[in-house]
Length: 349
Ligand code: F6P
Image (cartoon, rainbow, N blue to C red; front, side, top):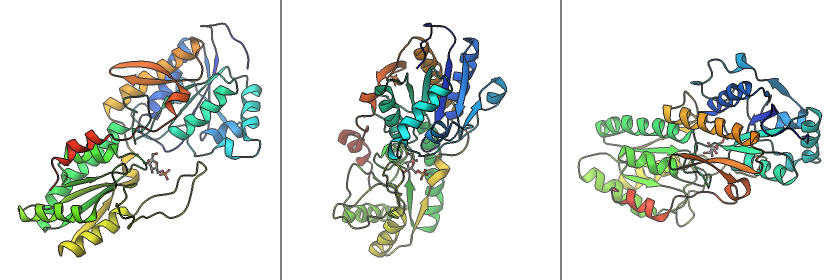
């Protein structure tokens, strides 16, 4: 890579990878706005690592970021492309960065996108990562942006479902996102007063779920069951997946809510319906919390590349933005601890 005077103007590549997430545009805007003030040139790669592999770029000037702060999604587009799963993929990435004279790369993504960033940093690319995922399961940061927005959507859905469920005396099962970690289910279930919350970290007992629903009916109200898409029963039944996998090997999930609703209906003898929130949780305008966190992450990432940092990720610790080693941040997922689940269990039934 080119050497550059520390603190001087740079050519910075940015990309957004993995599932989209409210707040991505706020990060992009912050990098571009501050970068322009520093005399930088910002190159946007389209659709995550695909854009780097193919040299598909878009110039990111002031006009490109006007009005994008409150917009969901990502103006750069995204993909789940994994250069390391493709023959010669890493070399193609390095060749693009060399050809475009990119001094530093700021990839914005979750465990997969930042996993690629970690390997590139080890290969000598100057990289500062920005964590994003609505799942909030990236280790080394207290929160990722996108989570707060998704949580707001899920909580509002639960509030709405309480009133219709009680009117019809039926169980409503709400399936939320969360492949490996149940943060959205845990927080939305607690905020929305769910009857039961089921998360991937805690295999559930079907009999206990049915008993909680029955108790709720007995008290004159209708149950709301919040289930993460990745939750599994203890005995292994109800495991649902299409079998399709993405470039990072993740199975496409979905269907646990519907299966659970039909089981609860059979066992309680009362009607049960499932509501799958799916991508509604990922779309739309970011919450103020997510806009602020994303903006602060963008500013900190830009400052870090100017300070000559590499192989690091910006992270939130308390109210401070800090730098953590990328390798450490992507080594393991941040799962819901047992004691956090115990807190929400107090309200079951
Ligand atoms: O990782 C974020 C996430 O929203 C997961 O909760 C979910 O399993 C996955 O992405 C779904 O991805 P996609 O919509 O791209 O298939």
